[in-house]
Amino acid sequence: MTNVDVIVCFELPCNSQQAKTFKRKPDDPLLLPVFLCDAKGAGQWSNNSLHNISLFGYPTVVVIYPQEAINTDVIYDTVLGRLTRFTRHSHDFFNWEHNNNIPEVKATIGTINALDTVTEIGENGVVITVKSNPLEEGDIVDEKLMDQDIVSVGEPRTTGFKRNIFDLRLLANQQQFGTASFGVTLTSRWEPWERREEMLDTTKSLLREGDAIFCEFDKNLKAYYFGDNANRYEHARWEEWGEFIHPELETSQKAAKERRNKGISLQNCLDEFTKEEKLGEDDLWYCPRCKRHQQATKRFDLWKAPDVLVVHLKRFSNSRTLRDKIDAFIDFPIEGLDLESMVSERKYAKKLQEQGFNIEKLNLTSLDEPLVYDLFAVDEHIGGLGGGHYRAYALNHENDRWYHFDDSYVRPAKPEDAVVSHRTCLIDD
Image 1 (cartoon, rainbow, N blue to C red):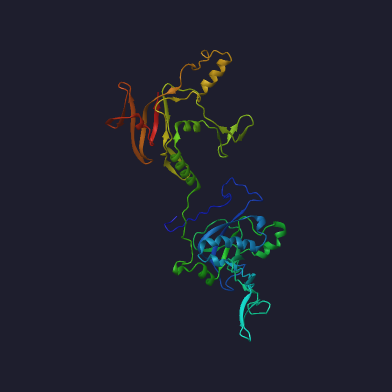
Image 2: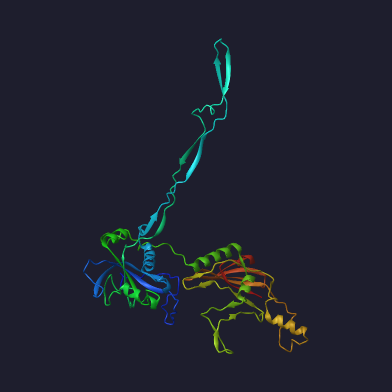
């Protein structure tokens, strides 16, 4: 590699199929490399000639199932769907239509039902009041209905990808998913789509394992969708990368936050340590009975409790992508840690005693001995994975007082001071 090499990685919705142990099944999807290249002028090459092509942009990978690749339109749409990520003009990859339906709405302008009062003066000067209904007289204020047009322009919707944005070229027996440079010499001929279509009744698919797809862009369409090299492809989005948070890290951070808010007790840690765990497919167990590797379960148990109990808390996490120190707060009792219910030897000793066995002859722990522990020392680590410093809290049995030890510095302390988030080891007696 050189300092100008670019490595492009893609997360696929299926197995990457690159492991030596991978065996292809008929229904497995095809993973095909896709390259962008400049179109040649008419007569500059033919399907039966070797040729040099000029690549641009970044290659990508399409995932398509064989049963889906039954016509070139499906393949074209799949490829174009991948290219939407690489251009700011991806909107113009689609055909759009607007919903211009105009509904007819009946609206009532007005209704006059009231009687008008009219004052008239007769021939002899008598004043006469007359009431009349203008609707009966056909006045201009008669009730009328008018059709009111309401123009409603709906949201634009796509009717599918545009055609003829690029020419879809097929190359068979492509051995690599990448190229050594942006100019490449093809040592094999283009595979005509017509030939694949003739074999469709037999192969049931236009695509095969080892195919590569080249998108041939006319210079004008290339300039519109991506730009040109002189302007550093001003419309392209090859160098734009959104922030990606790995799901494992996100889950771990969320769980750590919940633990900090909720708090974890030493009993929670002991329960988690002794919980049954199902081994993954990469950790198969060899069964001596059936002579095969099987997916099994494992579990740790506490068989016997010592006189001096040392609990070492795992404060460092390791995963495929992250190594970090665990700083979650673990609460533990200063006095009265009871392990009676967790020690398996004590459980079996009680069962055997109930059945009449002499547990002393079986060399089992006496049931009269309490399994209750009081804290007398804590070892703590300050710092991260790259370094740090160890300190300790301890109880002096001579004067029954607690002290904090930091190298040559010793100061009095309270037992509650030992219950801190960054301790790594605690000792009970």
